[in-house]
Image (cartoon, rainbow, N blue to C red):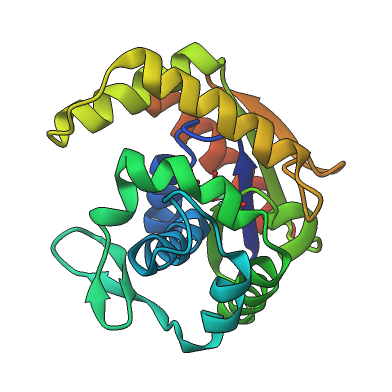
Length: 230
Ligand code: DC
């Protein structure tokens, strides 16, 4: 059977990656979390002091882009790929609230997007891929055979994210997380270059009141229906 490209886009903390991981495992496809790539570039910029401090230097970040190497390495024990930046496993650090607070601004820089979109296109050249992000169905793979656009209420999303951060031992409060989710929604959907928007041919999927099992079952059926037609 021919392999397809599955593009999963949507707002932050809609659980895209959880579903995308399950889906890729069941189909024997590669999973790519493009948010991790934007997060890694953000971490780089924060460490260099280009962002997150009193002043911002997007120009310096753009100048350094060609020096940054990003690689996903599959972790057998975890069952998914982890992000390595310049040879260092940054999987944990890129998920902190500090990185979340800066990532939308970095993701709005055109040169950053051009570099990452190019890498993402190459990763999907062989198909058999599930990629999640904000612009996968609109910019990276407009020709994807299956496009999903995930949504859920900001409160539900903030609560999920809050619990996730607490579980990881971060000292956070719900209001801050909700504020971050709302702010990111706004920046992500209003930026000039490839703003977050539903592709016209994407299936809108609101999971506010849906458990993981039901979400997976529905998605898996969408995928099978498309794959059978290939
Ligand atoms: O999916 P995430 O929350 O890990 O993504 C982190 C940020 O990166 C998010 O605020 C928007 C940005 N992003 C993007 O602009 N384009 C993508 N394809 C993926 C993420």
